[in-house]
Structure formats: structure tokens, C-alpha cells
Length: 243
Image (tube, rainbow, N blue to C red; front, side):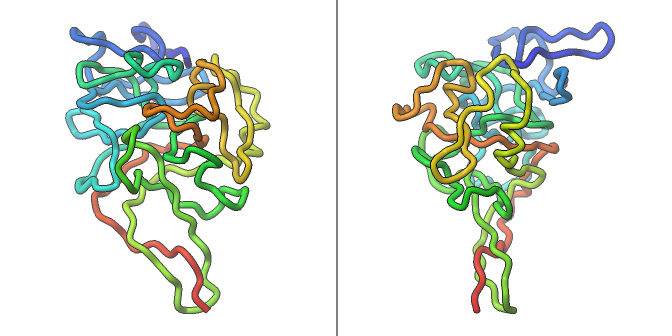
């Protein structure tokens, strides 16, 4: 749970893992940073979300799970509220407001993969970040699409709803970091890619790998965020070379 710092006399009501009912201690739209330079946005949730999932944020700073079917332009954030150790009630719902990360590195963005994550070549180079491509639980997970450089003029492609200004952190960089962030860090590499430990381990609930739940599938990625967003239109993405 990163501890927030304000500018001058500004003080944040609790850490990033805290979520709130009305009356909210902050106005949706307020921002704060932690000591590592990561930036957070206070939002009013309009649906059920879980730690490490992605949300779409509208102009009124209301946030709902980010889906691949999003047809409008939205800012994108990563949910910080709640603890992954419990599923029943320790997560924000439409009755709550809380913090989402919009800048910096998040250590455990959830994927929809129950084993081995979504990266199959032990690298992070050339992967596009997309909203979840199929409806599942939890909502708002991260999907990845591998881009392969073409060796000829003809390159296979597909349409995708890209998340701009979000990219994977190479696992070698993650393991080199001496950052505790008040959690187990950085986890262990997956069998076939730079996956970190599941969200439960990163959020302080212990490593519950092998016991996926409807709230936490079990594999996560460290990502860099530079105020990510979606534009609401699918774009043509090259995915493999055709010789």
C-alpha cells in the first residue's frame, strides 16, 4: 500500500488501498503522488472492481471496468483499492470511491490467464496492451497481443482496441528493483514469461497461486503507465509476418 504525499499542506485520507463511502473525503478528480513518483486519481466507482484491474474513467471522474467493447474515448487507470486476500467484501463497488493509478509503475495488473500469463516467449518486446477481449470475471483485466515485425510487404493483422501509453515492464527490470511498496516484491517469474506472482501475493494476502477466484485469476504483469487512454475505435494491428 503506497503512502501518498501531497504538496504543501495537502493530506490524503488514507493510503491507496483504502476505499470510501459517502461523504467522500476527496472530490473525484483530485490527484496525489507517492514517494516514488507514481500518480493516483481519486474516482467515483460505478461498478464492482478489484485490485489490479483496469478501469475506464469518464470526464466526470467516474470509473467502471474497462472492456474491449468500450466505444468511447476514456482515460485508463489501475484500481488500487481493496486487498486481494479476500473476495467477499474487501473491494470497491458502485457505492465507493477510491484511488486508481494513472502514472508510474504498477507491479500487478491482472490478466485473464489462470496459468503462465499471456506472454509465451519470455520477453515483453512487441506486445500490445489491450482491454480484456472476452467477458469474464473479474471484469477489467489486461489482454496482450504479440506484434511480430513483417519480413515482407504482406503482414497479417487484426483489429484491436489499443491502450495507449501503457507497456509491460521487462521482468529483469522488475527483479532488479529494490522497492518494497509495503508488499511482497517482486514475486517470481512464471513458467513461460515475465509474469509476477498473483495479485493476492502482491497486495499482501499471501501467495495463493493455484487457487484462482472470481476476483483474482492468478497472473499479473508489472506495467508502466504514462496517463494511459483508449480512443474508442479499433485500429489495425500487425500480428504476424506473412512470407
